[in-house]
Amino acid sequence: MYVFIWLINIILFLFLLSFSAKNSEINTIHYYFDLEWQAPVVVILLIFFALGISLGYLFGIIKKSRKKL
Picture 1: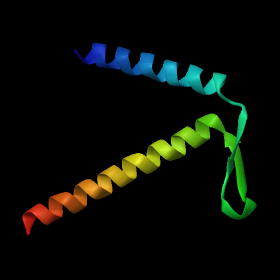
Picture 2 (picture 1 turned 90 degrees about the vertical axis):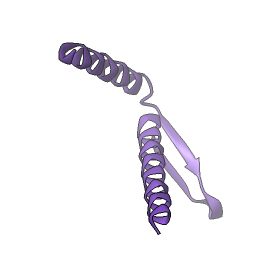
Picture 3 (picture 1 turned 180 degrees about the horizontal axis):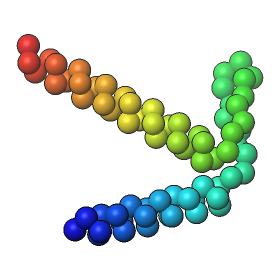
Picture 4 (picture 1 turned 120 degrees about the vertical axis):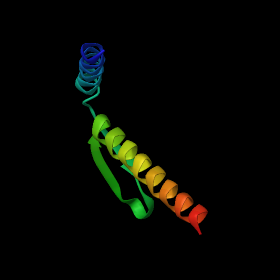
């Protein structure tokens, strides 16, 4: 079972590595007041993924702490 989990992790890593290699072009995100930010697509996806995980974890902690009261 341990070898199977490592195999799945390696396959997932290779998939994400190939995804990042294919999507390395620069993308522009436009903000208000004519502000813009340029970054590769993979970096933008990683930032928003991490932001979603952080917010989900934060709201989960808040909900759990309210149940204890």
